[in-house]
Length: 147
Ligand SMILES: [Zn+2]
Image 1 (cartoon, rainbow, N blue to C red):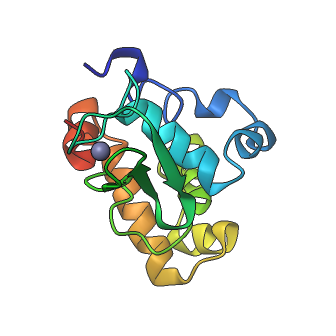
Image 2: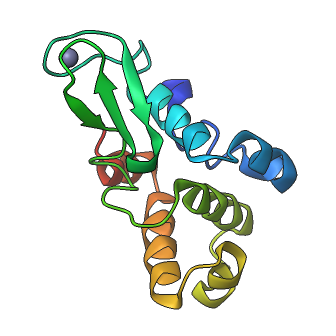
């Protein structure tokens, strides 16, 4: 089910060193860009409301939520993902994914802290989660928990 849309084979890990950071930032420069990317991976056939099955929703990007236009149920874009419960912007996560995957595990929390402008504890958490996901595709899928 992951095939070419998977995070590991897709745009996140394998291909990241092939594009420049400038290009990466251009693609993922806002929370909406990041959420729309997650949305494509999560709902490859388009968004479906889990309550009523409607396929149109408005995005509340500041809270990473989709609100169904029919029944108004709010669905988190990031629940059960790598980003679950995060308090930092997704653009920082996406930048971290770029740096970590281009650096093949040699990047330190201290360096990441400076690169994405978070505190050291947050940098360590982000590094740990992303590095874990950088293992096998199976590890990634289970860590991200899409189903
Ligand atoms: Zn609905």
